[in-house]
Length: 494
Ligand SMILES: Nc1ncnc2c1ncn2[C@@H]1O[C@H](COP(=O)(O)OP(=O)(O)O)[C@@H](O)[C@H]1O
Ligand SMILES: [Mg+2]
Image (tube, rainbow, N blue to C red; front, side, top):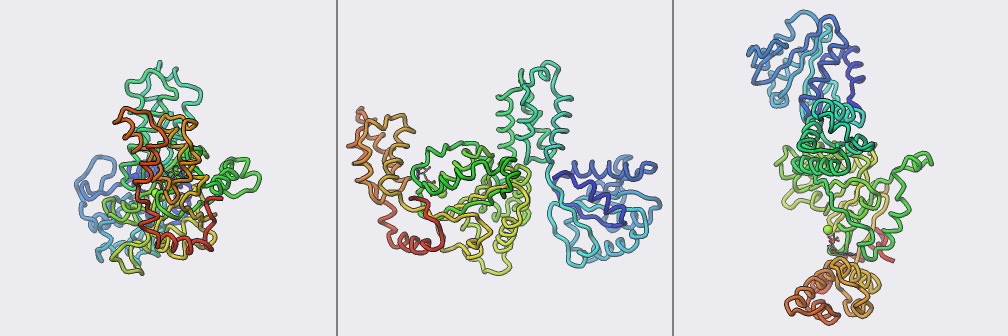
C-alpha cells in the first residue's frame, strides 16, 4: 500500500486535532507530513518538530526551547495561525498522567483551530484514556511506486553517466522487486552501496542488491531473508505435499486472480523431526519462485528487538511489503507455548492471537509455511479451518521414499546413484528418517575417504546400521503423534 497521504489529508480536513502515526521510519514520515502540510497550507506552511533533545523547532534550526513536552504542548496551544506540529519520541511519555491530561486539553482546544498535532511512534501504545482522542494511522513500508521513485532518485544522483547507460532493460524492475520490504532509508543505503565500484548494472548488481537486503533484514533480528534455494527434486517422497504445491504453483499469478482464485494462505507441516519439513519450506519458495523470509519467534520474544508486540509487528510489515512472498515460521510451537508462562494475557498468547487474526484476514499475498515437531503443544485454534489451507502430517519415510532420499544425497555429494543398490539400501534402513539417511551417507563418505577407497553399498549399510534412530528412542512419542494426527491432518506421503 502507498503512503496514506489521502487518509491523512482527509483527517486533517475533517478537523482531527491529534493524529497518531505508527512507523519506525522517522525521516520518511516527517518529510511526507511536511509536504502534505505544504500542500494544504501553501500560504503559511508552518511545520514544527519536537524531539526530547532539540525541543520545538520550526525550520530555523533547533531553538533549544520547550524541551519539556508539557511546555512544548502549551506553546502549540498558544501559537496563533495554522500548521502542523510533529512530535517524535512521545511514546516514552504517554505513561505520565500530566501528559495524558495535556493531550486531552489539546484535543479540546485544537479541535476549533486549523492546527494538527502529529505523534510518531513505532508501536501502538496508547493509554486507554486517550484512545478516543486520537486518529491512529498505520504506515506501511514503501510500495512499488514509491520504491521506483527512490530508485530513480538514487540512480540520478549517485550513478555516473557511463553506469546509467550500462543499465540492463530489466534492472530497474528487478531492483524494485529486490528492495521491497525495506524502509526508504534502507533502500537508499542498499542501492548506494551496490553502486559503489561497479562498472555495469545487470544481473550481478541485482544479486549484490539482494545480498545488501539480506544483511539489512537480518539486522531486524527476527527475520532472515533466506537466499539458499532448494529444488523440489531434492525432497524425497512427500508426494501429497508435492502434488498440492504443484496444483497451486500458478496461484500467485495475475491469471489465477482473473480466474477467480484466492491466493493460498499457507500450510502447516507437522510431524517427526528430520523428515523434511524445513526442507519443504525452502522448496516451496523455490518452486513458486517467491522470496523466502524466515521468522524467528524466539527472537520475537527475546525482547532484544523491543517489546514482542513491536518486534512482531515490525516483522509482519516487512513481510507484507515483500509480498508476494513465503513466510516460513519454523517450529511454531516454540512461539506458542513458553515454559514458565501462565496462559491468559501473556505476550505469547497476545502475539499468537494477533498472528491468527493476521492469518485469517491477510490482505497481502503472503504464503505461510509453518512447521511443528511437538504438535501436542499446538492449541486447537491453529488447526481450525480458515487458518491454514492444509495441514500435513510428515512421518518416517517408507521404503520407496528412503530409496529416493538415498539417491538424492548420493547425488548431492557427487556420486552416481546407479553405482549403488538403492533397493537394498532402502530395504535395510527401516525406521531411519531423512536426516538420518543423510547422516549415514556423510559418515560412509568419511569412512571410505579415510581408507582411500571408493564409496560402496557396504560402507553405507554399516554407517546406517550404527545409527540409533530416533524412531527407536522415541517409539512411544512417535506412535502417539501418529494417532493424534490420523484424524487431524492429511498424510504428506502416499
Ligand atoms: N524427505 C527428505 N528428502 C531429502 N532429504 C531429507 C528429507 N528429510 C530430511 N532430509 C535431510 O535431513 C535434513 C534435515 O531435515 P529437515 O527438513 O530439517 O527436517 P525437519 O524440519 O522435518 O525436522 C534436510 O536438510 C535433508 O538434508
Ligand atoms: Mg525443521
